[in-house]
Length: 361
Ligand SMILES: NC(=O)c1ccc[n+]([C@@H]2O[C@H](COP(=O)([O-])OP(=O)(O)OC[C@H]3O[C@@H](n4cnc5c(N)ncnc54)[C@H](OP(=O)(O)O)[C@@H]3O)[C@@H](O)[C@H]2O)c1
Image 1: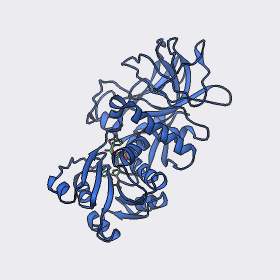
Image 2: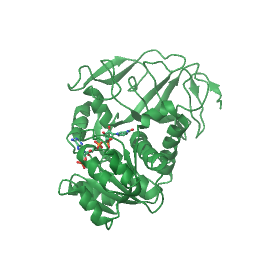
Image 3: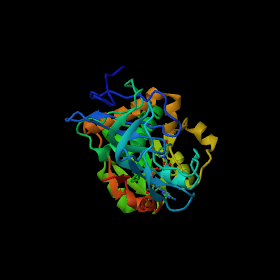
Image 4: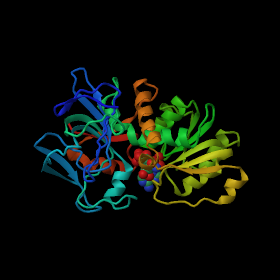
């Protein structure tokens, strides 16, 4: 698909995707785009690293991790000149992800060279496009009418992962029962939303406090288990009349994963999404055999390289469901850029619910 070039700016129609033909390694932006009523390009969504906090053509404020495990600092940096294949973005909101925090501790699977700007997703507006940005395809996702910047920044990682895990990997069917652990977290609430409201499954939410359990119930779960108050396995047994659940989405790992594995019904599927609790469990293979169950993994970001259509479709679906109001991302807290360390602490202290976002306003 091609688009007309108009100087340094594009007139993009809704639904068009902009491809950066040769992304520089130092600034690989993946952006989403939409047209506003005024004809400006508004965009949002996903970036793997760095250089995304561009606010003006001369300078931009960047959050920098200069030393692992130390507080982040904010610097005013001169904007680099735009390369022919690049796009300059005015960022409106960034989503904070568990992976950002791991990256700043040097614990994420992808290692960054210091200093770096953490961040994986954002929404914003195209300020300027390079001369060689000539095709409209693949790398940018339009934010549809009716989806706010705040919502757009909260969608990509959590909803992309939830859709991929529950639909593409676990093939969740209407009427099946889905157990979601860390249910009030960003991935957890997204999974509840997708399972209950898109896939029409019945959700059991498992979380670490009554407050979080109640939130999960408000967001579409049919039942909840507070796993700090007793055994998850026993709680699920009671709620399912000993049958167990068809699908588990687990983002905690450790003993919670093991209890969730034991909670599967015949031909159940457990999807490993993360290890927020810190411990990576091992899978007793006999359990897979006994009940004919499957253990699956999901690394959403990897789909971008291995199977782009599936990756892209998870994002486009999230945006579309949101526009249709079939899903509604829960933004639990909004911080200013200068409060980025507080935003990170909110997540690490297990106090966040849904997505924490940073506002650039
Ligand atoms: N595979 C992928 O592609 C993918 C995509 C997104 C996220 N993830 C991973 O999924 C996990 C959850 O991500 P998220 O964005 O949903 O995070 P989040 O919003 O911060 O939620 C994490 C939840 O995990 C629970 N938890 C249990 N033990 C914890 C501990 N020791 N420290 C902190 N939290 C703990 C907490 O809920 P309770 O208090 O209710 O237990 C917390 O709310 C992370 O490991 C993340 O890296 C993976």
